Length: 112
Image 1 (cartoon, rainbow, N blue to C red):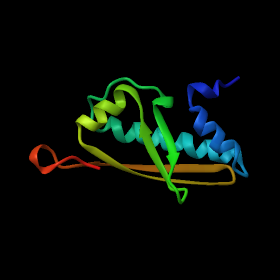
Image 2: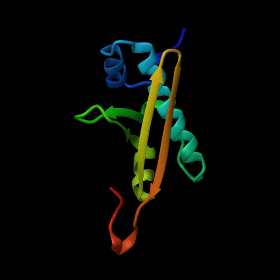
Image 3: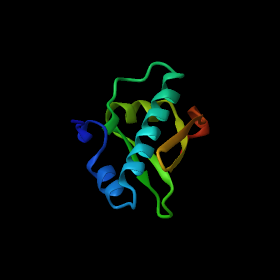
Image 4: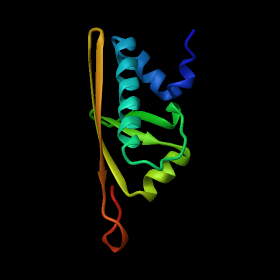
């Protein structure tokens, strides 16, 4: 049996179980986490992390965002990275795209 705590935070599980199709929502969140990990792998040098440290949260209008925790969050800030996330799911299909954006460094300020 799958241990959902190994993949999702309590907040993510609560959000998905409040949706009309919880399984599709969970698949969308999993796709988002996987897309983030794949985008991150292109940079190299990221610390070890687990899926619960990559949390998908939702803004006031429902827009998905990735909130990082632990060492991966600190590393992400040090790299001055920003990101955009898009999730789509319908029926038995789910997909997500994560774009990592290099922000200004030094005296130019920090990425949002």
